[in-house]
Length: 439
Image (tube, rainbow, N blue to C red):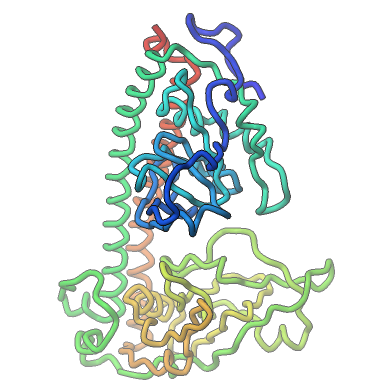
């Protein structure tokens, strides 16, 4: 596979297969270490996107010698499975315990020869053309597609002299560090916007903003302090009294052309906003009796009963504000508000409960799956104002949250542009398109 390049190479550059300047997936048989030697252990989640390895795990050599991928200090690791390859997962191996690591089998390893600078090789492997052509060469089906070893061996990059490789690598180290610093600042801004959003919602639905008090802790957990902060004319009730029914969803059968119904899944949740995302919906065949029993109406709330994980608690709730005939899946529950309880206020209230980790005491976990004890969850005591105040609060939050989301969207677009610029700079530099680096 020849990398696409200009017809005329810069002076001093040559084009040859990568196999002549590196060893692909070096063998471990030449390791001369005792079986009880401690080595680094690197699962896929420890491999960074566009660089970096997390080296917080170790194993004894005998425990990982078989069944894992071997690499050493100075090697370049490349994720070979979709979507990790397309996302740029890969890194230079450095700082390994005893200079050796074993990791996920979903890695390819390149060991540069004396003619190839390690950092230059790394930048070659995250350049846009390498990744796009590697994606085109993947083999397999669905989520199990992999980049074959032959692609790496036969990739034909344009290579300059060693001193030029090192100059380009130093330039890219500096340039990408500056870009990454800008991205980090914008990520921090996103976090601050999310904190502001969370504090705003919590303050409004608990009555704090009405009392003109300000939360001392923006990440305050849901609990009795919320009830104490509520205005005296708000009624304290069990959450269950806000709903006329709460029914489990259905999954149905494989879709057909005639009776297919939209089935909302947890994957359709935007849990941080309390709304459904804009992704494609799942279609299922639902019999008429089940559909009429659990169909979603405009203004219903959908509660995630089962799912979650270490980084995301179960118990997200979203508002159904569509009109397409739909149901929710069997891992979810349809919660229909009573008259006098406004759906948008309940949406924000349940969002505040979730963001304040108010679902945590109601979680039961088995076999790695979190489940909400709905009886316990709906027994929570909450303070709720009259419906006209619920509507006023909802209108205020709709407007205020929308303003924050506009800023958030602008910041996200800015980050996307910086990431795109980073990719262009790397690709241009390693393909000889920056003349000032080629001499």
